[in-house]
Image 1 (cartoon, one colour):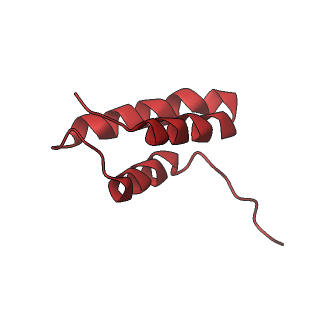
Image 2 (cartoon, one colour):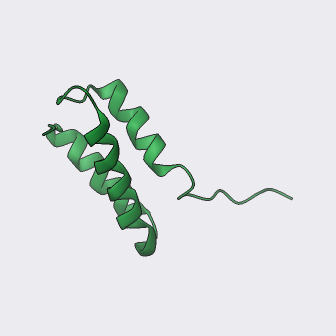
Length: 66
């Protein structure tokens, strides 16, 4: 069992909403998997930011400049 603060939960949902529909479930599954691997049930903000960035890796593509 893990606990996200209300603000953290809003951040997860905001990030998911910003992704293309076909990538949202992958993102949420990555979040859940990373939370399950944690040894502490409470997620501190610094850890949460790293968790979000890690879950977003490869899902957001930044266009390359010419």
